[in-house]
Structures are given as C-alpha cells and as structure tokens.
Length: 80
Image 1 (tube, rainbow, N blue to C red):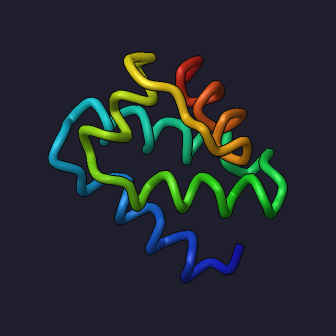
Image 2: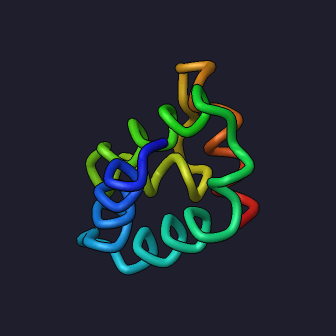
C-alpha cells in the first residue's frame, strides 16, 4: 500500500464516532496491518469504510460477516 493511501486509511481509523473503534482499528493498524498481504489490506480498508455500529457489531461478535474476505480480518480485530 502506498504511503498516501496508508495515511488516508489511518485517518479513517482514528476519526470514528465510537471511541472503541478508534482504539481497536488504530491499534491493529499500528501492530498487525503490515503483516497482511495486499488482498487482506484491501479487505481491512473496506471494513474501515463501514458504518460504525455495523463494524463494531462485527468486531465485538454480535454479528458475523457473510463475506469470506472479511472473516479473517474480523477474527484478527477481535483478538487485538
């Protein structure tokens, strides 16, 4: 991922309406994102575009994703 794209993604992760998402997404971005392959990084970026309450429901286990590309990323976010 290009540096400019990474910085835009970082901005989307830290400017959330829910503090829990700010913390979870930023922590993951700083500690686990670099280990993802390109496809996984794209999936994370797509998740970061979701509405806060929908994304938080996935991360905290209240909802499950039906997109197989998102499942491994959501699992990692749940652990972080």
